[in-house]
Image (cartoon, rainbow, N blue to C red; front, top):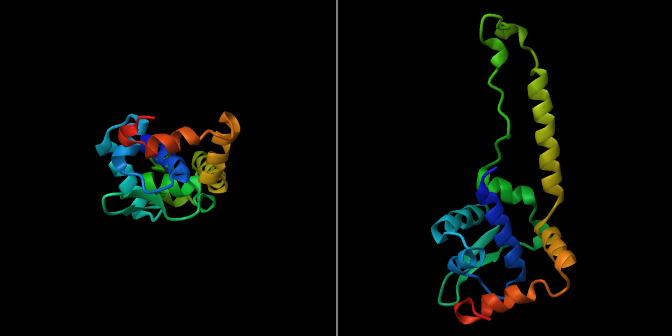
Length: 160
């Protein structure tokens, strides 16, 4: 999984607390990451329909759906794609003791185990939402956890 997924998830959680659109540059500054790098993740989220860009002087990014309706899997697939984490290359059909292709009527035990793990991982990500993450931030850091973020986002130059 790419590091872009982590940045995209953080941005989505922050956007749950935002009272107005948040410019990409502010999100980048908040997370101390390159604006160019973060813009790519935001474009991925936008192409997937998870965020949208609001144009104009007070423009920026907003979530397109309620945080309860955006799963972690939605974000992972927006940034990294839907391809499985493991791709079998049929190694058993290579080398001096290669199994003939016609004998390979079902996936090998390694491919089956990795496929099952991928399915379980995706199911867990599908069941967890951006709202769940935001609630966890509040549970871990108290009911005013997002107050500082809201104040910082609303303050000129990020100073509070």
